[in-house]
Length: 520
Ligand SMILES: CCCCCCCCCCCCC/C=C/[C@@H](O)[C@H](COP(=O)(O)O)NC(=O)CCCCC
Ligand SMILES: Nc1ncnc2c1ncn2[C@@H]1O[C@H](COP(=O)(O)OP(=O)(O)O)[C@@H](O)[C@H]1O
Ligand SMILES: [Ca+2]
Image (cartoon, rainbow, N blue to C red; front, side, top):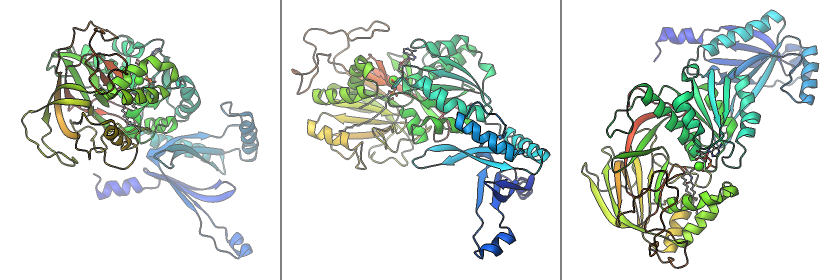
C-alpha cells in the first residue's frame, strides 16, 4: 500500500522532453511507474491541413520495459537488411535510443515491441538511457543471472534452436547473462543441480523442455536445498526447506502443460518476457510415496490407468515426437482397460469454488471400485490438447489437488468424457465420473503387485496377467496393474500415497519461474 505522499512521489516526472518518434514530434515523459509519449500537433501542420487529428499517445509500464539501448551505427545481432537500415537511421539521427517493452497480443501471447526516439543532443540521449536504466534497476524481482538447462531431445527436438533464436536475443536486450547447459543424458540437469552447480551466482534456473525437464530441475533444486540444510527428504514427515531460486520454463517439450496451465500459452517468447520482468506464480508440489518410501514429486498430473497406459506405450514411440501421445492415446482408448482397487482420500477443508463435491468431511473417504482412470490434478493441466484442462477449476498453490475418478463405463461413454476435455462441456457431468478436492490420497490395487526392483523400467509380464476390460484379448499384453504418470514420467509402483506438501512453490505469474517460499 502507498500513502498519498508516496503516490505523489511515484508520479513525479523524472524526465520529460520533446523527442522525435517515427518522424513525428512527441512529448515523452518518465515517472517511476510509466513511460509515456504523446504526439505533438504542430500549429503549422494543423493550419496547412485544416484537419484536426487527435494526437496519439502511448503508455508503457516501467515494470514491462525489457531494456533501453542507444541506436548504434553497427548492430551485428541484426540481419544484413536491418543493419543497413540501422546505419542509415543512425546517420540521419545520431542521438537515438530504443525502448524494448512487452506488448500483449491475443491468446495470452506477449511480444517484445520496440520504439525508437531521436534526441536533440547526445547528452539528452544518454540521460534518457541512464534514468530509465536506474528505474529498471529498482525492480528487484528481475533476474540478472540465470542458469539455463536445455533438453535437446524434448518435444520436436527444437529446444536448442528455440533458445538460441527466440529466447537468448530477448535475454540479451534485457541485460540478462545466462550460463547455458545442453543436457547430455536424462537426469543430467537434476544431478548437476543437486551436486555441482554454484547456485549462489544465479537469480533463477531456466528449463528449456517439457514437463519432464521441469520435473528434473524441480527435483534437483529441492534435493540440493535439503542437502545444504541437512534435511533428509526421504524421511517420512521430513520438514522440507524452501528453495530460494525460481524456475522459469521455456516450453520445448511435447505437452508443456505446466507452462500452458500457468501462462495460458506455450510460446517461448512469452515465457522469456515473463521471466525478464520477474513475474512469479506459486504452485503446489506433491510428494508421492510407496509404503512410506518417497518416490517423486509431482506438480501437474499424477494419473493411473488411462494416462499411465498412454505414457507407458508412448515412451516406446519417442521417435514420433509429440504425436506419440495421440497414437498411444488411441491405442489405450481402444484397449479400454480398467483397474480394480481402493482409493482413500482426505478431503480439503475449504471446499469453496469446487464444482461438484457433495460429501465433504474431515474424515477419510474410502472408495472401492473398477477405475478406468484415477487422476490427481495439482493444477488445471490445461494444454493445447485440452485448453481448459483435466480439472478446469483446480487452484494453483492452495495446498490441494483435484482427484478425478473415472469408473468403469462403456467405450462410448468414456469417449464422450474425453471429448469434453476439448470443448466447453463439463467433463465431470457423467454418472461414472466423480471429482474431489483433496489434501492427500492413497491408492491400493486389488491384487498385490509383484515386487519391483529399483529403476525397473518394464513391468514383469507374468503369464495369465492381463488387463481387465472388454478388449483384453485384442489388446497389448500387460499386467493387472497400470503405472502412474507422474508429470509425464513413469512410476511403476501401483500402490501409492500422495501428499500435497509444499504449498508455495512459485512459478512465474500466469506463467513460469518457480521457487519455494519460506512459509510453506
Ligand atoms: C476424442 C478426443 C480425446 C482428446 C482427449 C484429450 C485429453 C487431454 C488431457 C491432457 C492432460 C494432460 C496432462 C499433462 C500431462 C503432462 O505432464 C505429461 C508430460 O508432458 P511432457 O513432458 O511435456 O510431454 N503429458 C502426458 O502425459 C500426455 C497425455 C496425453 C494424453 C492424450
Ligand atoms: N540429453 C538428454 N538425453 C536423453 N534424455 C534426456 C536428456 N535431457 C533430458 N532428458 C529426459 O528426457 C525426458 C523427456 O523430457 P521432456 O523435456 O519432458 O520432453 P517431452 O515433453 O518430449 O517428454 C525426461 O525424462 C528428461 O529427464
Ligand atoms: Ca516428458
